[in-house]
Length: 597
Image 1 (cartoon, rainbow, N blue to C red):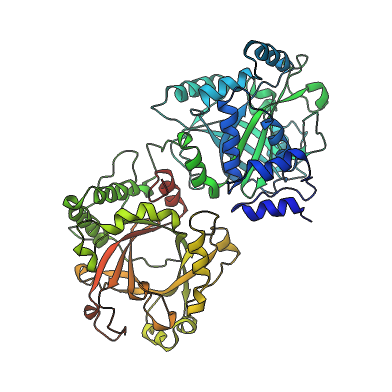
Image 2: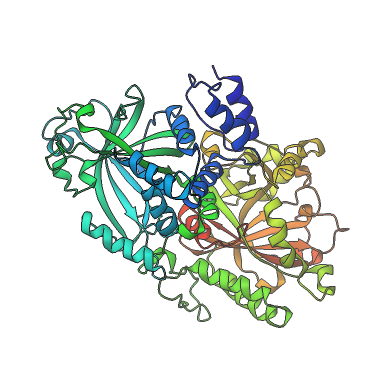
């Protein structure tokens, strides 16, 4: 049963803490965290950023260590760790027994509590750290037994892990740190990102064995954690990492707090690791704190710690630079440039639109050519992330000297909860419950897709818009909530439904181009204005990347009927949007294309 204090904290957070049920929320330290420290913050990661700033900037950082320890003790044991997790170092500190002596000398000299290692990390490395995260892969029993000389039997899930490192060619300290790491770690270069790992790191190193066990912390040996053991001789780690055991617990879904423990006993410091020696004899001491997080935290991580964003690999897989064009003399492959992607190309086009009216037409012509060269998507399904490329002046907006929509979008973007669209293959009977007898229009068309727009719910500027969308059923619009799989994509609610099918473009400038057409105009959708005048059209421009155009009728008084010639509705292009899979979305977030800047 959850405590009252934890329930109150969860209500205030868009991404709540997930602490153990037995956590004592009356503890003065935790009480201060929940009632004071996290005030005006809506996620635990923002609290961690706040603590990291204090530890890395202040000479005297008060009781931050105690607060991190309190959260760690209330953290949950992680059930599964397969895959890649992004990492942030919160702080390093002097964990050896001489720390108290060093701190005492410092306080006498400058009158404040100091930690030499923390001062060194905070002033020099906190914004240049090469460490990027960790990768976990479950180990088979035989491999585990070989690595641990038969000591570990594999009764519980056990993982082989490795650290990943980022590189910033313009950062001298980052590069120097990278060279230093190669002296204490067997670093292995990474030619490019794997499909399941989108961190754009340049090297890996520092193997460890991870499994569920009791903590090596002498003050809390009763705490169950996931221990990351670097100490096994066969892992090949050098000093000081061969003395290291990391420990991690979950403090929020997909967010893990970690502590670094080094064995400090001089008696065993030069000897090989022996799991038979007691934890007390090894004298493990805490040398700092770190975070691991899954992809759902990536955007917030990049916003809070922009200086620690990853360097994109120079030799990206072909997927990210290869256009999928129709066969036409006008559609020649474009040169993207080394280390660049098609999203970089789109981003540059959108920036060109922002330069002013003189160049706007040129850049929209480029986007129109790109759309005309795209292939009609066939077999599209599931959830795709969304983003805006650029808006265009259409209809009465042409009377303005400026591109009003495009100029307003950066200011409006934080208020928008839109995250993308879902696509579900259906039948005539399946769509009939949404649009009634109008479903007969799609007889003989394959495939027929029920499409939805998707929206998040967070305690930020977008919350009122989400609440508004939730109540659109009052005017007859379809409002539905996601299934369990869709929830994993961060979808909170679905609305603004459409029927998607292959068709000829209704945009007179597209000359009957084959597209996937999204029709919002069916009367039984009861779609609110102006989207009741909207037909979106989509083409595929690369593997997993789609470009769409927003078409609105500028003849709102003419009642919609599919029997009418589309030309009577005078559809005009009001801009371009994009849909993308997870890998493209990771790049979009990395280069901050259509994000809250």
